[in-house]
Amino acid sequence: MGEIVERVTRKNQDLVSELPLTISAQYGLIDQNEFFDKRVASKDVSGYYLIYNGEFAYNKSTSSDAPWGAIKRLDRYENGVLSTLYIVFRIKNEDILNSDFLMNYYDTNNWHKDIQAIAAEGARNHGLLNIAPADFFETELMLPQDIEEQKNIGNYFKSLNNLITLHQRKSFLYFSRINDWEQRKLMEVAEYRNGKAHENEINDDGEYIVVNSKFVSTNGEIRKFSYAQNEPLYENEIAFVLSDVPNGRAIARTFLVDKSGKYTLNQRIAGITPHEDTDPYYLYIKMNRNEYFLKFDDGNKQTNLSIKDVLNYEDMYPSYKEQQKIGMYFQQLDHLITLHRRAYYNKKGGLTNVHNDNQQYYAIL
Image (tube, rainbow, N blue to C red; front, side, top):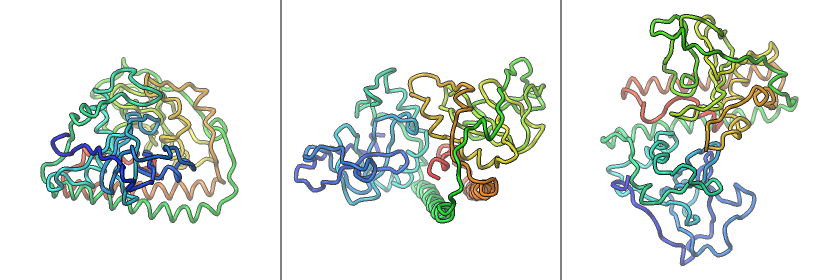
């Protein structure tokens, strides 16, 4: 990484800026006053780093949304100041590395593996990863050598994010008028059951697709098959991960069943059957990467959710009719994203190293 970017350590000695910034996994580099409703930075910011529009910063603080910290580009303001706990950097040569590509790259989890390798086990101080700048700049990036290819990928996701934003605004204007919502627990809107181990029946020629944590949490590749349907899944039911996995945190991921008689649940996966007055797609979107479930993940050990944890999940529900409208809206948006991705696949031959699935977008909706 150090070959294509360089560290920025300029201090705000001349008080060029007095805008204190923080990094949010959802909103990027943002004014502390706007994000926290108060100023967290010291009154004297002359010793802070001065960052300019287009430069990047790495916040080593971990959270449920950012288990290995967050890397964002300054887009909202001309400049700002950051604590020296951040690692600030800029691109050396934009003829070699496109800024939009890099910004979208760090919105994926492709860089987590290298960070995980240099963060010593348990080396956290109140959620702050112990990562030296020198080690950070030794991490590797996966990027196309063709700068035009990088630009196309960057522009693609930039256009897609703009499209999502437009849909968000439209939905906010509509749904903000709805006031007949009520708070309900999962046990009031759906039935719960546990999956079962399939190790004895798993075979490459098996008839049923085994829904396990990897299947739910990655890009939908079929990894296991079974001769037996020990715990069948039916159309419009939801498979929900109860634990994370060694190769990627899968907790709070959901999978909506598209066809009956096709899938069977594995162990550590819950089957959620929405009641007749609960729209399946609405519940599916609600449960996916929800903050309630993510709070059980401290980033230090494998997370396991109990039946009680899941059944006590509480959220807001409008009337069934409104649930259907909301579910249909996000279903159409999901379909639109899929069409855009397929069009890009056909043109460029795939984006495996750039983006894994549509689930990431739900975090910003």
